[in-house]
Image 1 (tube, rainbow, N blue to C red):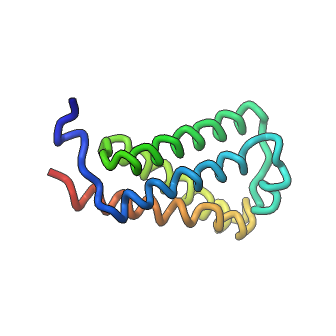
Image 2 (image 1 turned 135 degrees about the vertical axis):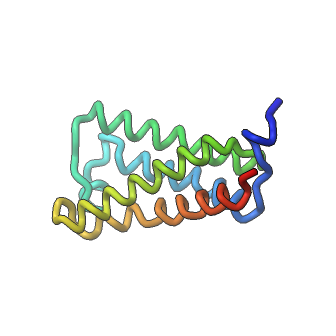
Length: 131
């Protein structure tokens, strides 16, 4: 049984965003999957070791499944959503910083902007619904 401190009802907009995050993360997982280097190149993302790319791809996919499940159930673990928001924001901010310093082309930022927006919505919901 969950308590109010760890689990909260989610408003319809955030539920919809969580359900949408499932497919968004599935697409993100494909971008980083080693068999698809041409997709990474399309967005200006670098290649890397297949081991690292698989780990990243799998974790993005797993988080997408969890987001989708939370959106369907309407019950969210606040800690999970905080970690998810931090991860999405960090990913986007790293891409923005890398593009700003010339490490990555500006097109790489396009991949991170949806994550930054989702992170902002998650963070706003968490702040609005805190005890």
